[in-house]
Length: 116
Length: 117
Image (cartoon, rainbow over the protein chains, first blue to last red):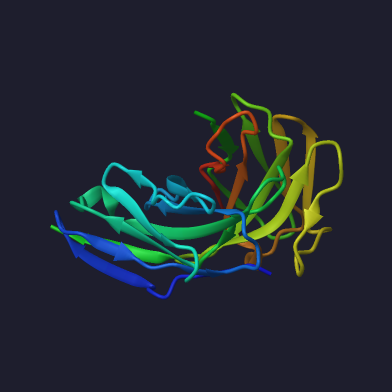
C-alpha cells in the first residue's frame, strides 16, 4: 500500500522569504501523480500544484515549485516570496495513475505560519 | 473550473438524531465522490468512495450503517450520519474529480462542521 509522510508538523517563515516543505512517499508503482493541497483557516482544500511521475521536469506554479526526486521518492514544495496569505495547512497527496475511482492518499500535513 | 457545492456548512444536532450532508458537482458530472472526515489540525481520513448508481465502498473501520452514502445521480452524493453521537462531531468534506478536465486533481467541497450535542 502507498503511504505519504510529512515529517514537519509545523513550519514558520518570514514574509518575503522562501520555505520548503518536505514530503516523502512509498510506492511500488512507476506511474502516479503527486499533489500539494493548501487548507487555509476556512478549511477549503485548494490545489496548489501537481506533478506527473513520468515527467522529469519539476512543476512550477508562480511562486510555488516542487523538487521531485523519483528515485528518492521525495516531493518537496518550495514557496518563494512568502505572503501572509500562504499561512495554511499544507498536505502532500499521492494518487495512482489512471482510474476514475482512484483515491487520494494524504500525508499528515504541515502547518505553515508566515511571520510579518 | 470544477466546483463542488457542499451543504450545510455547519450543523448542530441532538444526540440520537440523523443529519444529511449534500455534495453537488455544479458544472461537471461526478461518477465518483469521496467522503472524508477531518479532526482539528489533522489530515483527511477517507471514509468511503461513492459511486453513482451503486453501493459505496467503505474504508476499513468505518461503520456503513452509521454513515449512509447515497449517490443517486451524476451530480449529487449524500452522507447521512444516523443516530449521531457526540463522538461523531467532526468536519466532513467531500471531493470529486472532473473526468472531462485535465487537472488530474480533485475538487473539494467547502466542508461541513457537525456538532452533536
